Image (cartoon, rainbow, N blue to C red; front, side, top):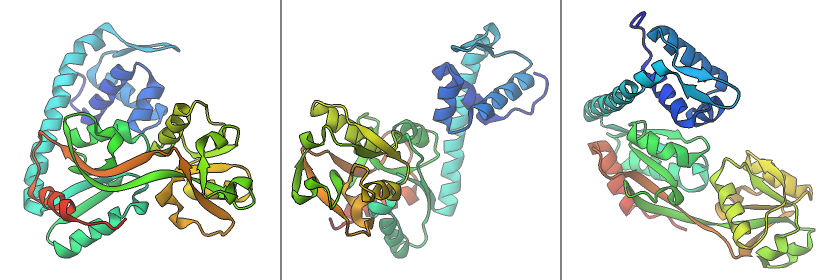
Length: 303
């Protein structure tokens, strides 16, 4: 090793690249640019004084030196995560604080109100809230196991593994948003089959809502004809307002509709989602997060 200026987080990046075998895919999962990941690996290679990867256009493979380094990197990363958790426990015991991860659409589900209510009633506990980016399913396990978050508000579809425990917080379901001038707006309920040939508007394919929409259509026997993918719910409304398609969104997202030209209609069949508070089962839970967990268990959110 040329020097001891080793960035611990670059080792985690190295392991993700080994797993994905591709710079683009690894960068997406790490939520950094491909260029940044490439620079991280170059710095790590210079620091170690060895070449870790054999790069080509199709895939990224470990070099012989990289294969020697890999098991040590895995053990080092595991030890680093354990150290983070141990230090976090010490800090949290002193500060009475915990970190709370929230899905990006938390504003529609009463999560902020619940956290604010908790802080009012238990002011000695500090709640550090952060929202997830997209690809919630990929973030959930890593964010909890690494100690980045103590608790997370998330969609129950990502909690199938036995290592999680959860408290159901609130529910939602898919609906159609239709321009009032569209013939389907005259119906109180729209059969999903009626949307087979309609131009549809979905949220981005990186969102959980998109997954629900596509799965629902495929189960009904057709592939949705999506003409607009939006990263913002307001933009989806704007497209429908201008008669460019019908949107499928979660019912609670429609609470911000301002135009009377947009109508919300139930669809049949629909897809239901449950928003949960989740944590790892077999993990230390500090006193602050335990108090929030118990509070949410008894917290009543009106539907």
